[in-house]
Image 1 (cartoon, rainbow, N blue to C red):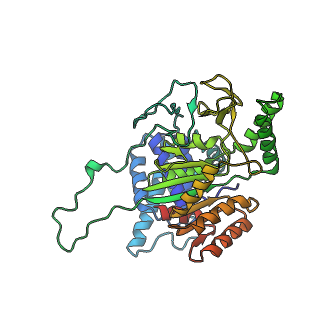
Image 2 (image 1 turned 120 degrees about the horizontal axis):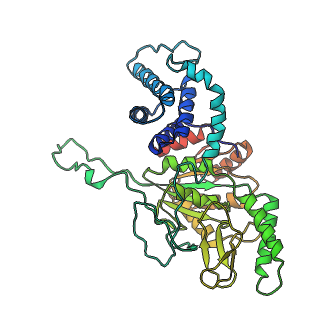
Amino acid sequence: MAPFPETEIMTLKRLEVALKKGDFKLLRDGAYKLHEKYHSGFEFEYIDLLKDILYNANNSNAPVEIKDILIPTLEDILSNSSSASYGMTSPYENMNHSRISPLTSLEYTQHNETVQENTKENEEKLSAFDVFSAEKTSVLNNETNYQTQKEEVKSEEAFEQFSSSETQNPIQTENTEDTENKVDYTENQTPNQTIPQENKTQTITIFYAQNNSEDKNKNIKRYTELVSKLQNEKTDFSELIKLISEINTQSNANVAELASILEQIQNRNIKINLITNSTNANLVGLIESIKIPYKFNSTEEKINIVPLFGLTNVFKCTQCKEEYIDLKDNINPYVIQCPRCKNPMLPNISCIETKMNLNFYNNSIINMANSDTWLILYPSAAESSMLDMMKSALALNKNVKNIYICDKDINSKETYKNAFLNIDKDIKVNIEISVMEEFLKSVY
């Protein structure tokens, strides 16, 4: 999957997070990104956010060499924006997009090659567990009665129980809108004044697709066959372990791009259905790392996770059939011991050639039909079952108005777009190069 072009808001959010966390390596990378973007002639729109970043940069303890790049660039951008808003001529208007601030030109030239290296390093840094410098938290047993917490909770349990109907993440993020500080608009109101209405909560479905190769499906099919024979026949456990190892390698890809999207929209007034055909163990760790409340197959929390084929870190007991999700670290065990009956627990995964969780599948259709917006990431025209699921949801459509499709394969995008328009010609389907930027604008 090729990374989508970085948007303005993504660049700014990188700086915002870096200043908040005191991550000066990330801040340096973000400063050069901003510098590059400005000197390429880009016209910035998020002026208030730029002002906030400038204020925080001025009051941070960041190294001087970073401030000498970041602060003058921010001031140049804001100065340019201010001039444009008053109809003034910009001093850079007639330059061929090679704007270099006198305060930053020397350092920018010296570190030009370093920027390119840092961009690659930054992509590696944007991993599911490292990008926001958040410590992973354990998930308590289902039978525990959870309370809202403002600090990270570390469980002493050996395993974490997984259930589609119980809370998987006890961490609750603080509400950014403090109810005590809300203004009462009903007082001192004249007849001509209107009472501001609270924005309706949007529901967004993000379908995160992973290319499930023939080899992966073949491995999962063989794996499920061996697991089904464990109780009745002798099974070659060494073959089973080898298959788990191969499936983990084929499943657990980097989820940095999804991390970037969720980080940018987590504070918006929205609910998110995260539906996926991926069995990637990093998906839950990603959401844990940025502390977004979630549940599996439920709309009660900020994020509703629906893994159609299971996840490689969700284990099922071979005897008592209990299920647990392992979040202890970023190393996936192949087998764990059931804390209830002490028998082996193996990854509970499937594929299109075996079966999928029908409860997840049916609820995915309902949730997609009730969403306002869809964001489809990296769809595969080869996986007709996923497209059929979306077509079924659109046929039941109650709310869907906009669909954004992000992928490098134009054929896949066109296939999905035409299929959707054949069902509802009034649906707006965006497959343009700027699709991610348009999606983020619609959320903001």
